[in-house]
Length: 59
Image 1: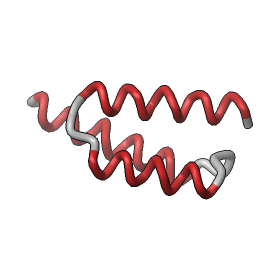
Image 2 (image 1 turned 180 degrees about the horizontal axis):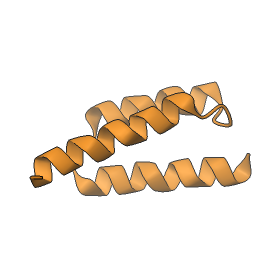
Image 3 (image 1 turned 120 degrees about the horizontal axis):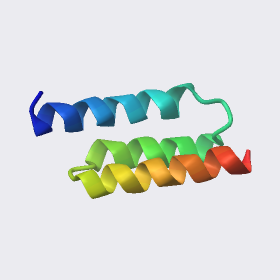
Image 4 (image 1 turned 120 degrees about the vertical axis):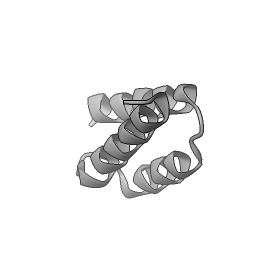
C-alpha cells in the first residue's frame, strides 16, 4: 500500500471515529470534521487524533 493510500485510509478511519462517537460534543465534532477535510499531512492527522483522544478521556 502506498503512503498516499495509507494516509487516506487513516483520514477516513478518523472521520468515521469522529462521526460515530457519541461522547464528542456536537461543536467539537463539527470542528474536527472540518479539520479532517482540510488535513493534508501526517502531522495534521496526528494532531487531530491527539485532540480526539483528549476529548474522549474528558468525557
